[in-house]
Image (tube, rainbow, N blue to C red; front, top):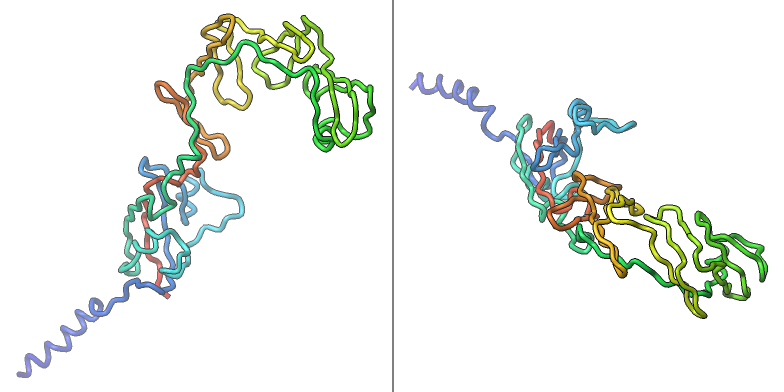
Amino acid sequence: MKKILILLPIAMILFSGCVGEKTIKNGDNISVDYIGSLENGKVFDTSIEKIAVENNLSAHGREYKPLNLTVGKGQVIKGFDEGVIGMKVGETRKLTIPPEKAYGPSNPQMIRVMPILEEVPLTRVLPKNLEVPISQFESIMGTGHKTGEIVRYPKTNINFTIQNITSNVSLSYNLKKGDEIWSQGAPWNETVVNIDEKNITLKANVSKNDIVQLQGAPWNTTVVGLDNINITLRHNPIPKTVIGQMKVSFNDTSIIMDQNPELVGQTLIFNVTLVSIK
């Protein structure tokens, strides 16, 4: 009987660290270190400065320290909130979070697809006279203009004559057949090929095999076909790239321009270490 009584306190000491060890539950205030990455291994965020530097994520002025949050309060994405439940201090856990518990699915309305091969008209028609609201005219041309004055549209060689000014401004193009016009950023110059009472017809100045640059496009484009009606263009593939928030990629037939934020539609991987439960 004495042996049992002696052994009982020893057993209680040995197992006291295992019984009742605190784990995370909803409502707990916790502190965690984390590394967030995509399925391809690209790290997109972390609380650890060394990891941020290694992955070119370090931001000026950011203080790298464990993240404090209240579990279940929606302060982080749902999969993170749910994934830390049951963790113990010092434990590291890998969370694989599908899009529906992260930043949601991709929005198809923010994805534009255009063909690599594209036909555009060789000619275009402009109205000989046009009328614009005076506010729009002055925002482009400035104020203080008078009827009969000749003005030039900015960043082009195109002149207009002001025919009348009221709440709208009436303008007529100062062009004649044979004039060549240019506009900054346009892929090619154009020649005036016809003028009648109402319209001006312009023809693109291009030749087969010309390489042109479409305004705002990170790729260049080759003229692969030309007839009396259309220009056939081939947009030349580039590696997947990001312009601002837009991701641009090519497949065999199309260009995909995706303006969904980077983490939308992605499965996210978090390596989380519990620092403390407060």
